[in-house]
Image (cartoon, rainbow, N blue to C red; front, top):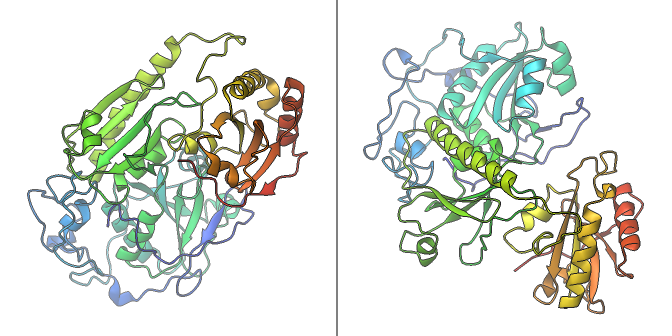
Length: 492
């Protein structure tokens, strides 16, 4: 079901391998890396002439379809609607229970020509960098089962059109690519999803379950991007001000889980726009009214200068593909607007360190500043106004120096470090995650935190430019020992 984040399809965590710069994982399931399918299961998609062209109607609850589940069940969950309101929150009303494909059995179907053949250049320039989920299968022409795999992959791709793209890799003509990726087929073609679910860089995840449309579709949906963070309107602070000067958008819908469309967009615009989503009851919610939203679902955005914009309210779409397309146009325009705002803001001189130059950590900006995508976060904690002035002044100066932006550092990129402030008097529990005493004896200190690894290093010495530079240089060069946190740091 679209947007459903519940229900585990049953794949293991997998294991990394040396795949020429890429990583793939093998999911669990019968037969290990081999498919388990029965020729009797392969049937046509139904309809007159087993046509691949479908006409969808969203005027009301859908009845059973040729796929074995109602079209209302499939499309109503884009954003929580029930057909005519793709973004609403009426819950799904299925015409029939999702199951195996039904229809007249077809022993042989003409080979599909719609699946794109992928070569090495395509993989490097499109699949590995664009943030889109891909459903891929590797094969050689002599293998048995090519037709069945191709047919199933094409059918799943048609159901998820707009959420993913599909391609085939002929390992006879693209032998080098298949070896580099570790996807050489054995006795059967192999099916993979290039997923951005687990990391910003994407990885190949192998499907090894029963080769049925329903199961493969569920697997693909589970591996769609998850860069949008679900938040609570009551405790979320919307400022729009981020370290990277990126725009921020939030989807307000009645959907219990992050909608599929929003997950797809969060992958396409990763590193460009910060995504959030929230479940709301209806427009009568005081927090919804406070944002100025009069119809749901709605997308509200904040420019990097903190200016709020209601990008769209009362959104409705006819299908997944058109929804992704239309909202992409909306986000492209908002991104361009933000670039104009950012370019028009005067640059501060190195000696001009105003408030907000170093952001203060809060529950709303923690993921953007110190989340798992940030290799290391330098947190300047303070317990008094004088301590804050001292910490902020030093971090402002240090952040301008090349020591924190060396491309050849152990962390490997210009954006490998972020600088933040923490009000220890308001967030005592946060520091307790690093030290049982919460560093209560220190009026000011620095914490270097690696969220992804759950490790940290603290500096409680005299805060001078030289000492802080030395500490940060040691962090970047790997010359300092990090410790495991007692627990995961949590901000109010």
